[in-house]
Length: 382
Ligand code: NZQ
Ligand code: ZN
Image (cartoon, rainbow, N blue to C red):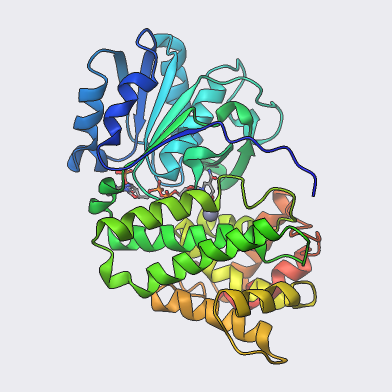
């Protein structure tokens, strides 16, 4: 184990915490509040923000779409430059927070914002930002990552930089009350796969990371089992905290990472508009089976420690089946059913996108070549 670990995001967790932004943003800073399609106007979050910022000078930018688009975000970048914005407050789910990270970074850069996504510009400076989370799923509220789409070319790419890590994240589980059920499910599945991407690799000696990953997985499993109790403070708070812990960096320190399910899943979203969480459930079971030669030992460990399955030669396969059962229990599909053209055309289209994005050696062993991705997609596309 060898790593550097810092998570400098201050978390304000609990009911009524939105008011805390009043003191978290310096009073002399001009604030840009960024949000999405308007859910915050319907559930009272916008009013709480307005109240908390009554002593600040602020402007707003709305309309950040799910799977945020650079074309839209570039307008917010221009606004930051015109208005001399000092601080960005993201109010929304992963899309709004990711989009705000892009805006924060691009506002400090003279070239085209998309250069960041194409690695032509390395982000070392950004406007400071804070987040009010409204949808627990991505962990974006306290991590360094952002995933941005260019609609024109159907590119969905990620960047990471310590400069865009939020200064604070407000996590009030009450905001989840207005979430549509499908978004709650998306969040559960996304958090689940984030843990798997950092856990289902190969055996290693980092017992704390493995043990905590298993605790988080068992927690999500119990929340799925108690899905009919989701309208409770306890249920909401546990999902919100678990999804945060799944991708705040901690369980990923000093261990191998996979992320191939995410990279292939992003192409399904870019091409066919599949919700992020759902794209993962379509790819992951088939990817795990395809990579069984590498992943058997960790799948067996997960079978024992997360699902409490009996020992046996087929334990790894039974673990994959238990993961599928977990998705199906939430009415999440494990095959892509909606796409354009024939099945073969859909598989080819995804493989071509992966090639164009240099996603040609994915996974903890770089063993997922385009041929392997094709094999996975042959199973994943119905
Ligand atoms: O836009 P509004 O009106 O706010 O509606 C949103 C949106 O339509 C709605 N919503 C959010 N909070 C709500 C609510 N509706 C009612 N009540 C509330 N409290 O939910 C819809 C989906 O929101 P979105 O932000 O798109 O969802 P999510 O949080 O799942 O974010 C997905 C994005 O995050 C990226 C994904 O690729 C995708 O683009 N990811 C970011 C990661 C990161 N930064 O670390 C990691 C992830 O793996 C992921 O790739
Ligand atoms: Zn994800």
